[in-house]
Image (cartoon, rainbow, N blue to C red; front, side, top):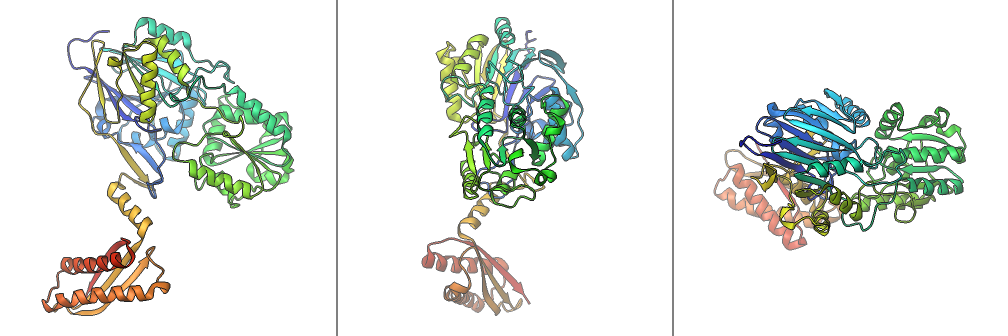
Length: 554
């Protein structure tokens, strides 16, 4: 397909560049916009009080009338988790495979969000506005994952999504190597490829190896077995069920997202387990410990997840003790290591035997390692290449891999969120950047927590707050009552009364000088309180709590 000489096709990167998660791109022609994936990420330790992090898709919502659809490559949160928020501002059809749509629909139902769901298959093709999309099956840690090749008037774009070249997937669904080979023969103008495991040498082990590790542990375990994994990793859940049935154990699922995803997986045949094997979590205590397996959320140490509650002894239905076995069948997402270690420590304190990916073969990645990335690049032979999905070091290493198989360095672009690549007559160049970044979700608030609020939260967490309350005569400015100091997270009031009394005296002295001038403006009074209090506290403690003057007029 060739351009008519008009505007270029633009590839707009809205998330997933320089970070893990929040994957979202848009492809824009003169008439239409197609979105691929709408993922979220989880907050870092510095994002105090934040629940979720979304991509800033305001560029799309401001052009909602041009958007013709969203294509989802698979059902992981980092690719579909932001969908309900996106659809609130951009009402468009959602395209995905059966499992991906089933899992997405559960999330949308929880958010009371309607959507027109259109099922696709791989291999398969469909026309979406200006775009002709071809779908290829890929192996990943979740069934029904796809890659998307998008034909536009200006050329072909291949978006691999998350993939690996698993030669023995447990569902028998291989990555469509011949489909990629055919695309390469026809010509791919721009390839966007998953970089998550670019720094891992060799090849990613097959998912089937985990089943062997699980069966070995199950055969030796005496008490209850608890397995924690991602709720969307249905391949892993299937292997746990198989290991349970092989050792004559019953399985209970814990955690809302786990229960929802397993329901969808069983309905579509991705979870194959005898009905008598599965028991409700409420009935677990009616069975001997040695006959039970609990499949739980919480592999990332999330504070209120099922596994965290179990480790703390606070779960309503499941406890853990000596003789029990806990398997963490997932690797920590970067930034979650300390939370995962906290949970592991709690499990050891409870007396459990703990297995995790660092010590046992109970987890493999769902992402292609360096040799697989090189193999796919050699198959496709793209004219231009851009690594996506990863932190900067992973993107840079993926660039090196591409160069090692003959991709010229001058056709490789490393991009960041907000960057734009323009495709015109099969050639790629950088375009003008757009607004992009993070939108923070705190409770029901979306976007109302930003850098200033996070800065204040960090100050409060680090040095606390010191409130100074004064009461003045509104006419004369005379100090009638106070200063009264209230400490929260700064010093313990009962043990630091002398310090607080001296601080109050310093504020009173500063206010006496204002009183002589009959100053009654709130701004002046607050500034005086803050300056006097701040100088004294810093000189006395070398700390800078948040200072909050409160002026009451009578």
